[in-house]
Image 1 (tube, helix red, strand yellow):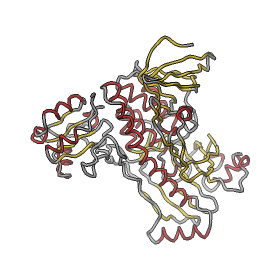
Image 2 (cartoon, one colour; image 1 turned 60 degrees about the vertical axis):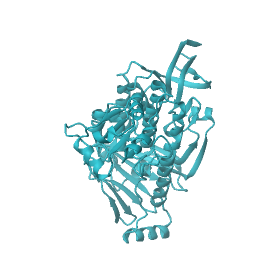
Image 3 (cartoon, rainbow, N blue to C red; image 1 turned 30 degrees about the vertical axis):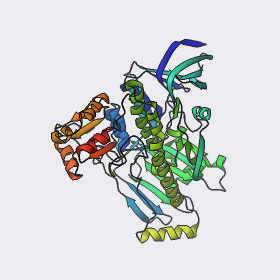
Image 4 (cartoon, rainbow, N blue to C red; image 1 turned 180 degrees about the vertical axis):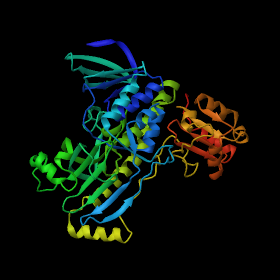
Length: 499
């Protein structure tokens, strides 16, 4: 049956980390949000275990920083690459110090605890309606919005609901993606791994750091997660009997060099196939995709969930601009064009790193080890956080389209606590006064916060980059850096406003 006519601003399908983050950001923006989730509760077992500093900054923007820090730990111990002979070939260091996002660069966590924090955050917003045990069974869209056919799994009843936009955060098998017909492009890695999670019963002499066991006889990864949680990821070899592999006797034999059954409790053992795919077409009219629904990356960089949460913040401010301030809907077309190149670069790097770790040919492994010893390891840094073509001034130099740092201001606040969800125009009084009156009016229409007496850390940044002003988007990416009044007028045209 059709419910009484109500048009939600946004319907989100799926309440994993990506959907829950998006719902928190849109809830804070005051939009009316419907969230559909077919499961009754949070999946109780471990899955993702790592996020980076930019993700914590995004969750800070959702008002959840302290709650997230309470259930996570900085990845200060780093990662060691160890060959089959037990020789440490490379150490990638970690740090608990605050990085450019005003957070440590890496954190470890237990996904059910993070999801609980995100769901508790939704309770702050009466404008966010959560419907658990509701499954999407169909979508139709027209010029005004989308109609969702939904099955209430508890009551065994069907209903129809309406929203101006629908975002599929519904995972690798995304029904929303199937509805859109977006093709998935395979980027070259499809490898089964056994994921083995334990809770320690007693102190065990295990490393505090992550270890990549690059042993051609059996590649493995060991992770110190959080608290008493430890994880081994074990590559499945062609001759393995998969049913036998997940039996307790086999599992404990595989990790026998490090832990015994009496020392830890098995929490989960499952075989997953690591995929490397990206969708073509993240928007079709009123329908959009985010997270695993539009890209899946092997876990070697710990960036799968991170990529989905970056999708959420990119999409959230654009939906707010379109729905709350009347910006042109074409702004939403910049979502895929901005995000897809970085996601693809992450996936391709994860595939390359996976190929190094997963080497099972002894001769190739020996060649790899020799390169490590010679100081030429095939390990690469994460690709720079650079947006593809989109809602920023590509003519404003190499800084445009990159994230702005989050310094701590002289009053003790972090920058984003001052800026909130708004765009920002930051510069000296004379620099901002040089802007045309129409430019200042555009700042007002875009609801940008104008800071004409920058705090010392902001002044230092401007001086270091020989800039008179900088414009930031609500997701803290740089629209452009201005060195003249003309620059400022041109860059400001990229702030979306109602026609």
